[in-house]
Length: 200
Image 1 (tube, one colour):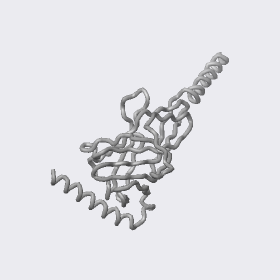
Image 2 (cartoon, helix red, strand yellow):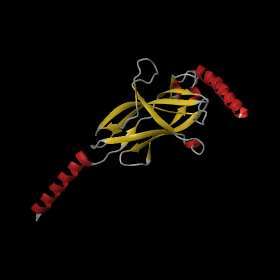
Image 3 (cartoon, one colour):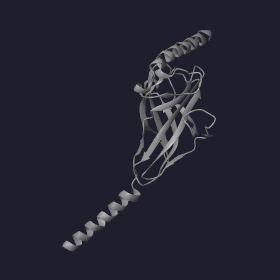
Image 4 (spheres, helix red, strand yellow):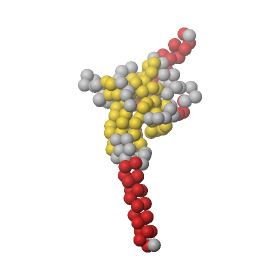
């Protein structure tokens, strides 16, 4: 009898070990980006983030689509769609742009990807304030959006909204003079939006 119990226990352990090491579905972990590139004005919004995706399980994870949401403004602002994949965070001549194709994260691995979200007429003024944002993912074999990572976007540091510029997304890394420049840029942008609304 004891031999049977030992044999069953050994078989159970073997099956469980195999499932744990080779068959289970892990979690997809995404790091909060500490830098971002932005160009935001009354006509267009472009936001670029470096993401590190980690798969904690043995099976590959496939991301079909991404979107950038604004939880505090989601009643009035649509999510920004995923536009492109880039080789650099800076928008310079060395940058290589690709279409938003599915992302495959192999089992027990991590990979970095630089993604850009954007749309014309975004409906939200990002400059001059801290904005809560959320990156959602649509996984393979599912049409539902799942939260990938949420973080505060320090848009109060966007000093040059009219052109692609890279900014820090940690409060201690933002130069003091950037707030003054960002505040002036926000006032100009708000005045432009207000004037266009009055013109309509």
